[in-house]
Image (cartoon, rainbow, N blue to C red; front, side):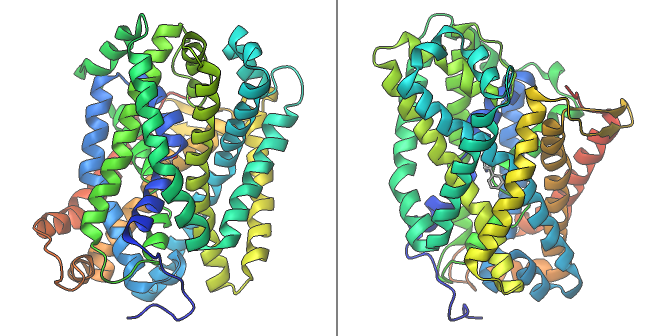
Length: 462
Ligand code: PHE
């Protein structure tokens, strides 16, 4: 089928790859991945993570691409077109994306705050990086900047870009800034790895100790892989819906997954050694990249400039991810509910802002709790913020990915999917039968097993 007349398509192959990679590469790679790698056993986690991406991540991404490109529709419309009774899966994806975006914008706001902070008061950060961060979150007074002003600015910037549309907004920005991001990260990695004591961090990441591996570690790796590749909520599906029929989806999948994983690894090898070198306790999840790198910026000549540049690029990585979630939700509201683009944006941003604010407030400033349950540990009450992260990373994302692969493998049909993946025979896909096996059997079974094992074994809730 041909794309609907009014639907704009990406104008170049690199535009699509960089935009999809821009969605994938984000705070997850820089803020979440290093902390998780450290907490979950270093080298063993890295191996499991790469395995999860190679087997499951790539399969689910290609599944999303084929649905999107075949239908040229938003997630709900696309799934409804291919399987009448399955539109709810689209809704579930939209809900998951919105929950993620609510807290994502908060962390994105913190990156803006840190750009300004490095410009005006780097010395205050350097005095006590952890205390500075906790203060941003409201350790002493209401975190007006950390929970309201900067997150709002971040959300408005994302909305502004989305309002400009796919080509003018998303494609142009991604082409410009993604390469810069890569270069700066590699420079920083080289610098942190040569700091005194950084060797401890490298050892932690390079030593594989299988005794650290359990169900919880595998589930964490799986959730992180889906989060990092922006899978499960129809984002890749929506981007592929703006893609020409001639594009090679299989090759694009390989490139995007490789880029995303490389960046995560480079970030891990930047931030974990930095934490060891600066004596900042790793493991605080998002806090990790806000606190541990301060010691590095302090130690190098021109560190403040590096700091400003780093948080600017982190901001950029975050915004290219945030716009991808906004775009998929806006595509849904404009195409299915016939709302104007601007109205959709205002509606979504208002709701997201308030939910997100509760995320930040619950981390340090208040004791708002969520609820979590596992057979092994019973009912627990993590902070509302952590609850949002668990709900999305450990439950909703795997659940959406499970149903998406099941949908492609069994409801729409893997044969049709392979035809779309190869642009109807235009491209070779030597691993097609392996992919069909993965999508039909291995991926749903593995995702379901790991998720259920996580519920049975319990997960550390702090
Ligand atoms: N993949 C992004 C990251 O790693 C986060 C993201 C999740 C973006 C879900 C879009 C959708 O930070």
